[in-house]
Image 1 (cartoon, rainbow over the protein chains, first blue to last red):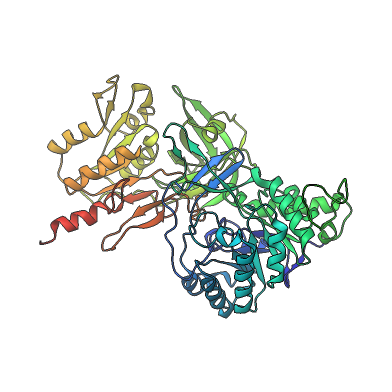
Image 2: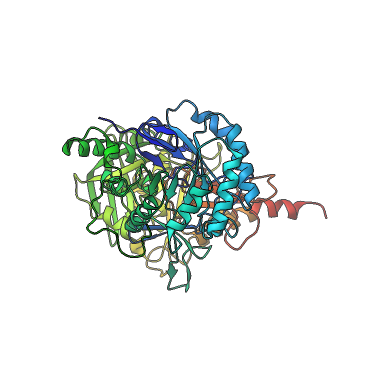
Length: 313
Length: 282
């Protein structure tokens, strides 16, 4: 039975990656879970230097969702390369570094530093964080800026380049195409949805930053729809992310056309979630008489063709 | 080392009002949890939300490989736990976090609890006894019904001074008032330990700073993961010699912090920093 997938020139032993911002730098899970179980992990977003992030409170639970405004607190790419990356070397899992920037130049510089570091499999570009005042979603909400950032990172590294697209746009296929034209090797779809939760007693937002990014099962149907739209719009592979907690959730994305998936918020709820999903995936393949998970990619039978509702072909 | 386990509920003892004692089997927590450490736990094993909740370990029983939580039902996560039946499974990661550090020889430990903040002090009472330190509990709440598990301290021979805001039990007023009264007449150089609402922790921190006493506080911010990855539970901490506060994860670098290093809501620097500035020559 084969669970291995190839994405953007990466050979992953299985289609499960840990999503950026939900798995720290991976080393936090040493001793709690076997990192060798993962197809790959995507680091917390990294800028050139360390960042404090947003004031608190930073997280709020909503029905089936988690609203967060962390604001990309982190150690900076140099400290990551020096102190963290060597600790990931013993593990047989693909390390994908999520790069951030306040400017196009900063994205490229972070990617250049990552390119020189041993043990990095690919670069994911964060053009979709809703919780920073510059960069992030500001780049991912404009197709020309998306093109500019992806092209600059493309030039800065030989590693596979994977922009993570924002769902906070009217038509994700426009952004998927812009990223593909700029030289992306794959796409991660989607980041969190911009949300606002209000404490009615205090008449203030529940998060100190005000708005936040919504993740968790609440966003899964939206994420599946957008990943599906993106996958139809481009030739490069799409990695699905949004509310995955079990094999059935992961399979929704794969049937919709995703070559791999990322597990996000479920990491917080259950750090042992990977072992469970992998055994459920194997059960599914056996139950359906399949030998290779790749046979399920895009195997969705859609009730009508062409699809309705602004899905551009 | 913390371990992530699906654990059965072994015993459930409802107390007054929204309070309940829950005992789970978890070998690692039972064997190694120290006072002030906590578990991340939720009823059932679903990977869907809600998140696990952090609860201080109240007691451990290494022989039975079990530990007990003291729980107040306040929302969806605690309610699901409180409604578990014996034999039901919870998902539990622990023991986690930085525990309380016992006082130096000769220093009495004064344990200041507000409401369900009493939980870690039962285990701490055992630890203090095993290292031969004297302890005394100051236990505050809104009303008498909020001062549960008092008998645990009587059983351990630890004096307990209750305080209620409505005067229904013990001192009529805030828990810091009998604490101050005791400090005025009690032994020199006690060490303060506090667990409870932020306002109470802040009051204890100020009081300790004013009297030049060491104090450790257990903070209780919203926690998402318990492992330092969600970065939701950070608190501004300014250690001695640090030029400015830095956000630190309460889940991994706390929940117990030295009180003088905490930058409280509405403040810009820690008590230690302000104390140093006050003491500096003009």
